Length: 234
Image (tube, rainbow, N blue to C red; front, side, top):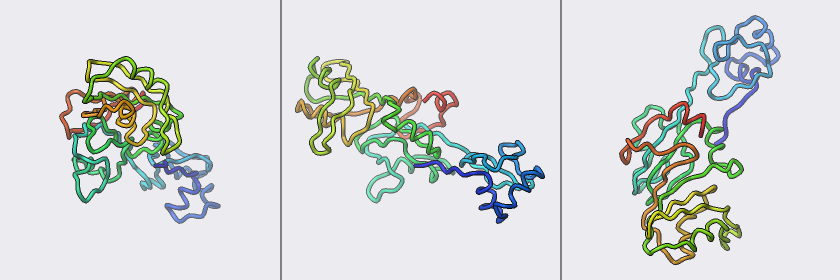
């Protein structure tokens, strides 16, 4: 989702009916404020969270929202679904319809899911070029050994998409459990990577996205606002 950004003169014209030619006069008179400060520059960039007033009338006062949700198994990462409960259904918020999902989880995957109305923030977290790691706890049907570590680190070729996965980190917790860190999110990637060893994944749980770790106090289906530090350090 892209952020809504506009030059100040275009924003004022679109929201007041004043021609862009006359906006300069309004600014010279000090009639426009952005985030409480008198605006003078027609080229100033306004985004969806800029607080803008004209003659003390509020033109825009959107609030950025950043939500951590403990997604349970059996709930879909979608806003609307005809068959299953969605993560949006779990939220008790007046602004939930304005939120979008930051990196979906499969129906049978549980754990950390992030939601926001800030498109630039979500793009930063999900774009492969930013290399934000996503940590998963994986439960396997069959025993695992050290041969998995190198295979994940080397990347795997997926013929259907004609791509090779980015290197992934695998740590063995015990004979049937591993921690896997991905830098991307290909379709059913973890299940397909373990599938190369003919080892079915029987449980998949996301623990963290970048520096944001699932709050241990949350129960499945519960959510909370991210802290300022979590948002800034993500």
